[in-house]
Length: 280
Image (cartoon, rainbow, N blue to C red; front, top):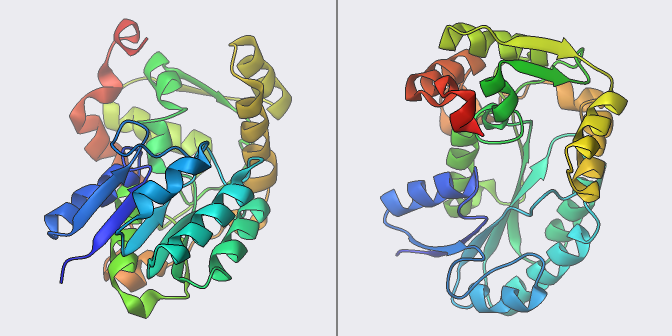
């Protein structure tokens, strides 16, 4: 029998991929977003109950990050309402090496719902769909924590794992750690993209203070500056976040996508070869 599945953040990096997979599997999917009807907004707890009605399970992708103030309260309210509305299971997207995210994991684990927690490393798509894409286009990437070795994970792999977890009860109660198959520094990642695009892209190592100051000078809101400071210092600085997991291979029966493959596939779309004028 088909399931009714709520995908919060259903238009985001992982959410839209999960929606695509589930629809191809003929599941009944509701996209939780501010632009859908009924609307869903993590900042408006009154919107939670309406999207949970009639659902069997839900994917929880809290934005901007489980580390920010208010996240725990939102997850607590959401899971309480999910239990009240009769949902059977939730799958939480969490962050690898994030202590604050682990507090949200505990809320989900103690909610009375069946659950799976998916802890993700930094996404490959940060270079193509998010914060690092404009510097890639500009041909100059300046980042702190240059010595950190990161097992970047692909959003397509995360989506496949989540889609399976939402429908596979054998994964109930598990914490799944999703990473790429190897670790790269930011410089190595940028060099890989440069090779795939046949472009010159320079990498510059800077201090965290310089990076955050640059964000401030660019008019980035203070709460986002705080978040990036946290993610660089506390998450990338955490040795646990720099370890490779084989959970993707164990669950999907294939190896996780390598960063080189991601770079080649993405380069083929042409998005990294736009002019700077187009990018802006």
